[in-house]
Length: 127
Image 1 (cartoon, helix red, strand yellow):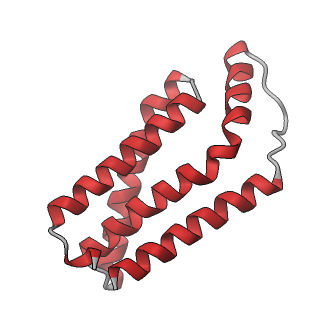
Image 2 (tube, one colour):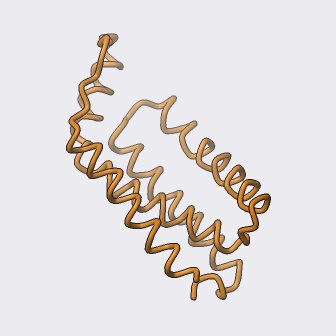
Image 3 (cartoon, one colour):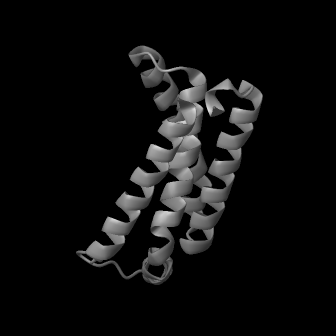
C-alpha cells in the first residue's frame, strides 16, 4: 500500500519523522552539541539503510517507510525516559559525570517493543 505511493511523499514522510524525532530529543536532551549533531546522524543512518536495502533487494519506497516508522516508534519508545534524559543532561552540563547511568529495564523493554511494533506495521503496509 505505502510502497505504491509516489516517492516524493515518502521522502516527505521520512523528513517529517526525522524532524519530529530530532525535535523531541532536542527538548529532552538540551545539550547543544547533541541536538546539533543528532539529525545529521539520522540522515547518515538513512543513507546507510537505503544502501543496505538496495544491496539486499528492498526498494527505496520500502526503506523510506521503514525508516519513518522506526523513528516514530523510537520517539514513542523513549518518551517515558524523557525526565531521566533531562536530569542526566543537566548533570553533564554542570560538569558531573557518573560512572554508570542506570537505565530502567522497563524503559528498554517499552522502547524495543514500540520500535518492533511500528516496524511490523511498516512491513505490513509496504506489502
